[in-house]
Length: 254
Length: 231
Ligand SMILES: Nc1ncnc2c1ncn2[C@@H]1O[C@H](COP(=O)(O)OP(=O)(O)OP(=O)(O)O)[C@@H](O)[C@H]1O
Ligand SMILES: [Mg+2]
Image 1: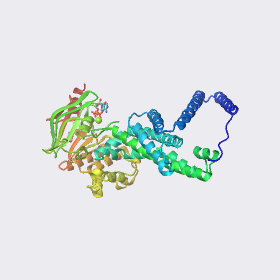
Image 2: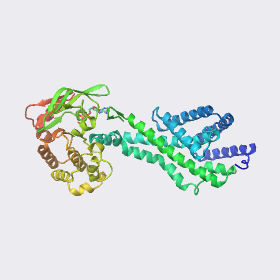
Image 3: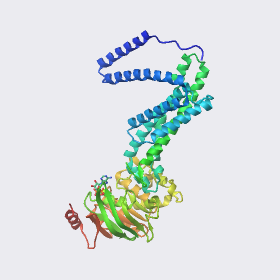
């Protein structure tokens, strides 16, 4: 990838934080009630990215399969935990689903699409799996929350379908579909507007780093398809396991 | 014949129903009454295999919940809710949908049968083409009954089927139930004294049990009986 990106100087960083301070002041004056949220998020972002960069530097230097696996496992735990917290559902199945789907899809991207012979090449594996997992995480949280909400609200309809001989899946399939649809909407919207309304971070980054836009576009298409597949697979699996939790001995439990 | 044996239902840890043995025959219209909150809906849902219960439900001499799968049980001994629920779409969509379920793949939707029941319940055919969400409470209640009758269950368990009907339409319903009771056993939970008086067997649910009243009742007596068993 040609020449490297221009460095941002320390002075510029200080300037950015000063700007953020100004923004905080405006938020405070407008009394929007989000000053605290904004400040904690700013702080979290700064700390997480700072330590993230140190960890990434370390991992890229070691670059062995076990360090990649360890880091990937930590990512899985954090992502699954976030899903559980956001959607307010419990289920140990979320961890293996996120792990297996993200791993398989990243592996596919890395080995089959890009053609990298070292599957664990951390510079790719960690960043790509991060994108795959992040999108799956948001979609699963959305889908699971929606699904549980729908089941709570529609217990009487589910009971009615049961009375006509519906099996577990038939009784909830309508809500299953609705939840998957709502989880897929963001990525579908993204796909249709990419390149016109916005240029995604990965592509922008590659172009800034001096990559040929044609190649950056190919990467972008590859990652979007990979993400779409991961999102569908992970939401479907998670909803399937969630569904089974609502039934015991063939009887619906809200 | 439908027989329940050692039939118990627990709600949380409270025992709400405890019936040693009770048989319902086809050919009679059964009415079950009792004070509000005593467990009538719970009993019907239990017999309809929609909530957890202990014990056995026989129908015929040999077939029971022990050897028939729960989906088949729910169709044969079929519970109909007081406030019906539908999928979005028209009435006809909802009737047809039932036959798309995997369990019902060998059955066929008989439109004429549906219209026959509709005529008897004073339901216009146009109503089948209306969006269900625009139907009145009484129309929904009758549409839901038609939906349940066309799967031809062995016994039908009706939870306050006339709660949204005027007295005239209730009479039509009672008449229809008497017509079908030889093919489809009919067990009705009702608060309507008219319904109870016009049923063949009057059953009082109290003390966790079904109590058969072997004497004639009238409106005042029904009220008195419910009052006496209040508490
Ligand atoms: N799923 C449930 N969770 C908690 N309590 C329940 C549940 N289902 C029923 N109950 C309780 O069990 C009791 C019996 O309820 P049920 O609906 O069977 O009464 P009912 O005799 O049909 O009353 P009504 O004449 O008002 O319809 C009530 O006290 C009700 O609150
Ligand atoms: Mg009731």
